[in-house]
Amino acid sequence: MTPQDMEGRIVRYGDLIPCKTAFIDAHTPGSDQKENFTIIGGGVSESTDQHVHIRDTPGFNIGAAGQPPKCRNSLHSHTTAEVFFVLKGRWRFFWGRWGDAGEVTLEEGDIINIPTGIFRGFENIGTDYGMIMAILGGDDAGGGVTWAPQVIEDAAAHGLVLGENGRLYDTKQGATLPDGVAPMPVLGDAALAKMPEPTALDVIPRHVARYLDLMGLAGKGPAKVIGADAILPDRPGFDVDFLTRGSLGDDPVTMDDAVVLMPMRGHWRLSWDGGAATLNPGDTCLLPAGFTHHLAPSMTGEASLYRVIANDDPAGPTWTGG
Image (cartoon, rainbow, N blue to C red; front, side, top):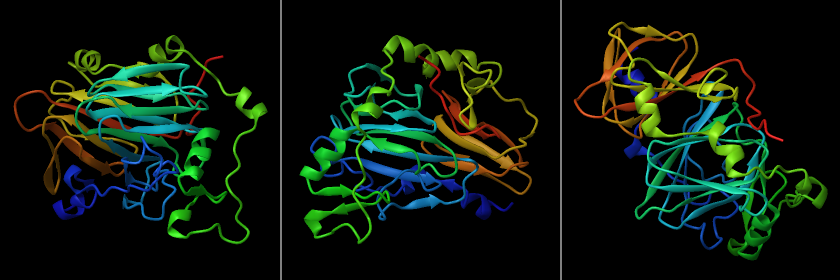
């Protein structure tokens, strides 16, 4: 593979193209300054304006959300995995029918594997623009997303209507639902009553890992973060490892399945027979299955990286509570 070919598999943080109308709450005060990024795969955007950087998927999707302080993402649920790690800022994740069943605050580098089948949202509670990177289960991450009824109702009051085809229509711009397309139905009382309402004690121990803990665990080898035998035991359709300066040896490695590299701190040199590239925090790199390569920090100082590995597991579920 030539360096030019590899650059086509790397999405640079500085080249990310946002969409500000990706979701139904794009006009709702408090959520109307969100930026959504679709990096690998089609993501979960409801807007035709969403830019997709790499369309091929390795069995999961990679995206990101950027938000200014006090901006939040409204309550919704997924039937497949939704994993976030904080690249920049300080974030509050909350869940439940009204967002008050439980919450957790994540700092830079922390990771959360949000349980499937519960309403969840998140908010930038830092003082600057924040960024969270997302891993979404399955090749088609657009399926299986359900908004809390109040989100759909609030959006309609501000001119946005979601069709049952999963597309948004802005009535303020004169758009109407196409013939034969009905509005997206809201969940009824019976379905809402079946939605889990786990507490923070139910969720945090099994679904949250802290950056400082991972730094300690990855000193002599990759720390298994998400997987059947990992710190956060789960089979969401991919595995997640955490790498630091001491995690990898001098020999090249070959992974049987596709791999996505997502640096958190420091600069990482990726080399292979045919070239080399430097990966920086916020970059995303997709490596094909069977690709032999070597990875190591290219400078002194703190270095950390999340590695997402495809597998044959189904894309969920992740909620195993009562």
